Length: 398
Image (cartoon, rainbow, N blue to C red; front, side):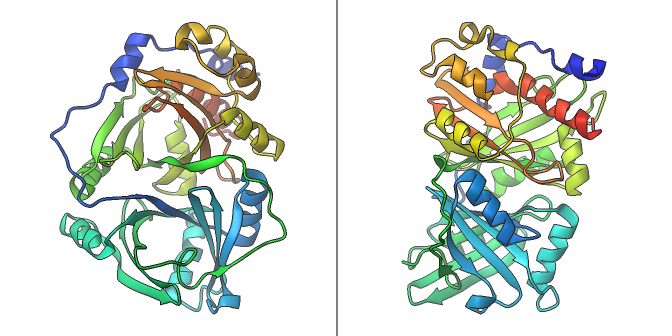
């Protein structure tokens, strides 16, 4: 191990005073949701090969292939695979004939520039026309005007607007639709259907933006959608010997939707946000946190299926219970799997982060279990970021 990486392996925990300070809710002027959001409807990825990507998420993460759209269903220019696990829906879309449509060309260009990446964080709303009109009136840039899609099961209304980079929010109205997902998709019952891994719902989605742009998007979510700044972490909170970043968490009124927004901060070397922006070639979704009710069982299953996770030094667990207090889970099992633990005034949480799930060091996943805690694991930031830096060092990007 190099001296630099050995140094990165040493860390100290923030004091309880520090944790309480950074976990305190901001007190901005009261905000109100511009329109009600029922939850995350789906997350759409643009990928180079949707068939192979769908196989990976099924075999490794336990998603089920439930619907398909492509040439066999009359869609000549692209293919989309709908994967589902409990309340989580991923749509994996690839361009087949970029020469046939502007949409297919845009998908191909997106993959060429960013690699596999998130294009759409779709939000489930009661009235897509009203929500879209209000968002645009408050400054959102339209991508797709409200469009009605119908089949024998009824109709769906969908509209979308831009957020950071080439990412969008679609607004999906389902109140007059009884089908599986949306018109144009055919139900699939594949022979290959591995057991689910215990993933339940999307806890939060994290976006990385350029230096100086975090507050712009904080204001966007506040003004356009009526979100509030739930938590703020500065470069003193999220820092190591080599790098640092700043983050603000935006949340809607019912806290079903939470979007942390990160930007890089100055440091001795390149931060993980800088690395992401370089390889993604712009801002975008860095990771998605997927919730489970039994993180030990879920992570054990994912590891057995080949999912790779970041690791922290075993010294992390030496004084764990003195720092965290009593927890229900066996510390030995958590240490064996590398699961991190943190506490806030409402309880505690358990979390672990995968390594990037593709060759570009961009997208990864967090597996999280909340035992009352409403925060994001501030007490783990230093250990986590030093683990990420060790991986950056191996890639030559630190």
